[in-house]
Amino acid sequence: MVRSTPAIFAALTALFVATRADAYCRSTVCKDIDACDGEEVPGCPPLYWPGNCVGYSVQQDGGSGLDADTVDLIADLAFDQWRGADCGGEKPGLFIQNFGQVQCHAVEYNNDATDAANANIVLFSDDWPHSEATHTFALTTTTYDPVTGELLNADIELNARDHHFTVNDDAIEADLLSVLTHETGHFLGLAHSEDTDATMFPFYEEGTTELRTLTADDMEGICAIYPPDPSIDASCNPLPRHGFSPLCRDDQNEGRCTISAPASRSTREALPFALVAAALAMRARSRFKRR
Ligand SMILES: [Zn+2]
Image (tube, rainbow, N blue to C red; front, side):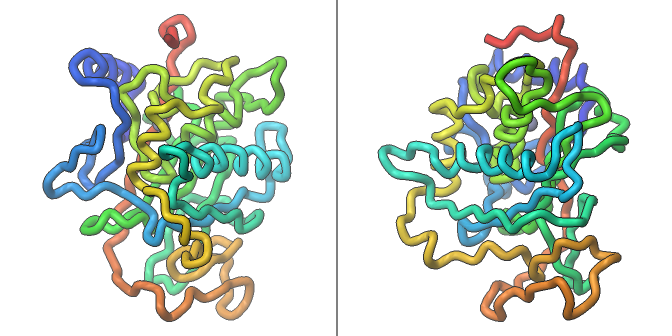
């Protein structure tokens, strides 16, 4: 999903729903091309975390009136939805670790050339720099290997400039768990679903909490990316490429506050190729009726 204007985006989505069967979709290395309902797109491998293993961190300042510990809890619950999905009686073969809160407040991926470590960060943006998508709750930006589809980095930005996020069950505004459950789906490799009931359907209506929980379509999607694998916890390595750091690139000092990745880790390198995995498009409430 590229950063389209909300109007165009809504029109395209409506067309999509009308002409295609409802189904989950996976993001691929090809811009604007998703792999839906288990189908392969020749030349466009789908995105996934290598080793079925990934870590994430919440930015330590929190935002939208919420402290970081609260955001941390909600982020955990969002990822829990995906790791707890029902894959025919088993869970997805997916290990997700919370690395703890980070100082870095930036969407960035540090490749080999910078010799800096990384973190996959959930952060609030008070100035929402995405001028072409002002009516957007959140944006997940992923970096991946354009040949294999291996995800290298993912950061989730929450739009605290235009929305007030809440975590309670009353006086709900932009429900953080709903938005984060959708965004963590992108983080893990899912694209927008054509199923209007799915959490990965690209619309959220403020004041609702339906997206907090997954539908069968969402579960089918996550199970397709990460088929059940009972051995995954013991064998995987969730460290980011080039190690983990709570600091942004410019603040990192070699030998301090970093953990190196094991030497056995794949050294395959790729040109960083940033993709806006998806924008959770926001439309005026009057224009949206969730079914
Ligand atoms: Zn989305």
